[in-house]
Amino acid sequence: MSGPDSENFLTSQLTTNIKALSPYGFHMSTRLDRTGHVVGWFFVLKRSDEEHFIVVLDSIADLLQEDLEKYIIMEDVEIKQTNEKVMYFSCEPGLGCEEDEIFEGELFEGRAFLKCLEYSDIPSFESKLDSHTQLSEDDIKYLFALHAIPFEMPKNVTSSMLVEYCVDLKKGCFLGQENVAKIMNNRGAPYFPVILKPVTKNSEFMLETGEITIEGKKAGRIISVIKWNQEQYYLTQIFREFRVNSRVWDVNQGDVTVNLAVHYLPFFGPVDNKIIANELYELGVEEFHLEHTDNAKNLLRRSTEFDRSFADSYETLGVICGNEGAHQEAIDLMDQLLEVDPDSVMAHTNKSLYFMKMGKIEEAEDEKSLATLASFKMFGKEAQSKKSETERQEKEEAELKEREEMFREVLEIDEDDLIANYGLADISFKRKYYPDAIEFSQKVLRIDPSYSVAYLLLGKSFLADDQKEKAKETFEKGISIASSKGDLMPANEMQSRLSQI
Figure 1 (cartoon, rainbow, N blue to C red):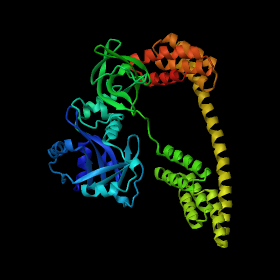
Figure 2 (cartoon, rainbow, N blue to C red):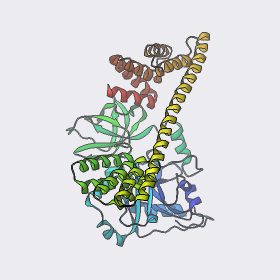
Figure 3 (spheres, rainbow, N blue to C red):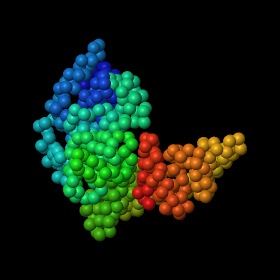
Figure 4 (tube, helix red, strand yellow):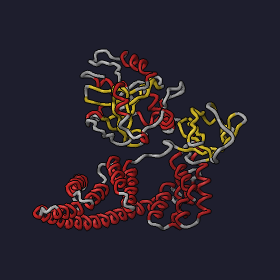
């Protein structure tokens, strides 16, 4: 997509705000028809305000181009298909790539990088990659399915499947917006994708794509079957009442009944590159202690690829290099550490040591002075942090006291006021007065037995007061009531706490 009106045109035609993209950023987007059904999903890559790439499956490229071109009226926009493929990386690919060839965004719930390549360049580029970094086509299909992103475009795909990833209602109008707004404003879609996973391994009964029932009621339909890690999982559009995370159901399809647990998407949960970086760092430290220094350095460098701001990796890598006598390399790494942590005492301390070993006395003394200043600065920050925490606690208690006085005044007028009783239960819980929290929560439920958040608070209070059986009974009853009302947030939290019990 190119031309002076490229960005405005795409923003008006797609479900996401293309103007919000930074240069060399990307995000997922969709094109809907007037009824809110999905014409196609894809990734939009921004090179500049006047140049964008739409990365789309070959099978719908012609359809999408034709659909968009119908709406070019007065805009100065040109659409053409390119002879390029796109490669996906979970960390910065490096390999001598120029920075402006790499687009950064989020994919599979984690930080990701895309690189466009001409078909002829792909074999030579792939040869530079380690074999363990490459995924098969089946792996990619499973990853998309386990995030409810349709790798193919089945006829039953609706905007509810992609609404979490690809919709920005604040950006302005787009085709199908009215239907999407109804979904988002009406407690979410009545049917929404989840994974149903077997409770017992290697179940002899298997389900297929198609309609399912739970407790004799129509519950939804299985969209696709995922065979992964010797198990069978089901991507399912399921009705709101049954969509409680970790809840186990007997799922029926014809004469077959399978015991399955609801699992919210994404199946693996958010992927935090900082956590990956920390795991690589810890492995690197283990290798260092085993005196496997080459392995240690490789793991520590990989750690910085996943998190460029991970100070511990730069410091440890620098120390290893310093121990090996590579003093200039160690100093360079300490400079990288100072870029991500300008107040690092150890960076200046280590630089002083390495300059001393190189015979650069004056530079060593300068770094020693900077280390001393950094130490004073660190002590000052710690003192300020303690003071801020004390002030925060005092402010929180003052707010609780003000709310308590207001609620007690209301109860003097009407002792059965629902909000006032619940408010005092919540305040008592926050102050760790658990018997009072239990008493007020029980009163709320006598006034309104369907008040789902009160079951959650009562269960938490029983749990904190070491009354596990009563907590369990409360959560079980609360889950049933909350899920029947479609109150999924308290239902999910109660199910999570029940599972922990």
